[in-house]
Image 1 (cartoon, rainbow, N blue to C red):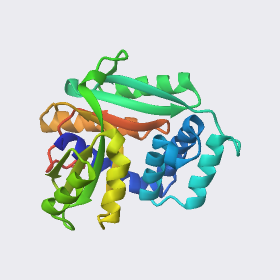
Image 2 (cartoon, rainbow, N blue to C red):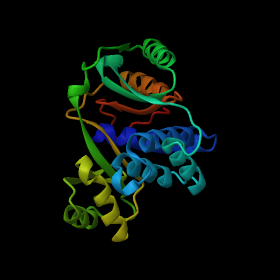
Image 3 (cartoon, rainbow, N blue to C red):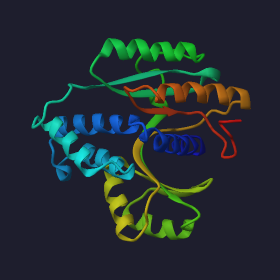
Image 4 (cartoon, rainbow, N blue to C red):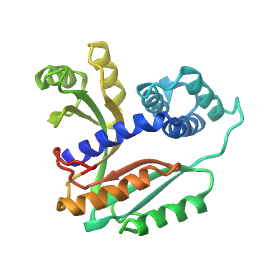
Length: 247
């Protein structure tokens, strides 16, 4: 899990900076809108919407923004018609990469994603070429400076989590997607505030590269993640806890 955890931490810190210029909020609004359109505006009966709203609140999105995004999805306000698109491919060193997008222009997004792969030393593959290497899991992280693993472990397992481990500066809780919301809620009620929470694709096994290869692969992954239509990027790249992406 160390590779995914390190990327999640990098992405979370990057997202906090992106929020200052609106990029992160724009992506979250898309996700909330589509979730509400597909499953309705009631969070209690719409797991995808609950997860999207949780991410928005974790990123300090104003309540009004969240409510407007839901109304766009339910049709109470006018909004763009976004569709889900998933792309699969390989990065430098053969690392597997999955890219989940929300777009109102399929052709534009496909061309952009292909171009980013090519420029980053990777190549876009066929559907199914790497998806079998990942499984969808709920991931919740807590600051290891605030809580001990034993504290988190006891409460998380009681709440229905599958696993708890320390990953660098974070204590990571893994759940099945169906248990994600209930575990987050139970932990919050017990006084545990998470630093990161999402349902994401997690690699069954990771691939290690040398420092130069890791840096090149991570540069491609970040370029994909920076695209306005890209919601999530998953990889099986093992990023060491002491790796400095800025080095």
